[in-house]
Length: 180
Image 1: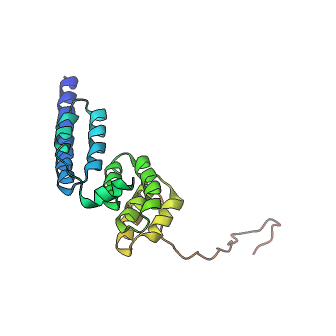
Image 2: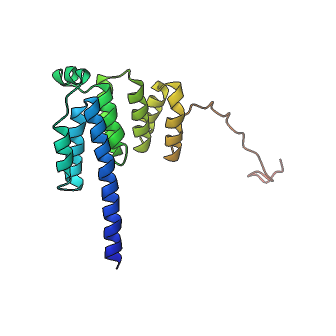
Image 3: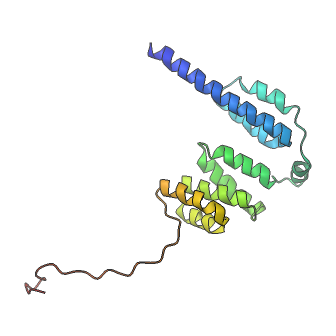
């Protein structure tokens, strides 16, 4: 009985996930982001063997955009492609997303979206020093999202003025037995 219910839940979750990935692949084909599609096909094959055939067929129709071709000719990802990969990996594979940020930052250091995504990845991997660095570099409009994500992970990235040292308050008698 439980096995049948579990199978139904598994199939529903699988179908929903595959539908979402199919929509992503179609959007990436439209945008000419062929390299990101290869990652989706690979991940799908690993998670649900046999299901990647639909995505592989769709990826065959992909024609790289001009930005993608220039970046691929240089052997590098564009900021848009890197951001798309990091966004995908933030949904469960945060260590990989953070690693991609670290490597991508060397290539595209001035991209605002990449900075924000890297801040989120640093928070989710509980890397406090990196989270603080990306928080400071992120655009002001995006800092709130980074701060909230970090707080959920137990990291406070916002700079706060240092509180003055509290003076010990004596209650009752001191060690010598004298009253204060």
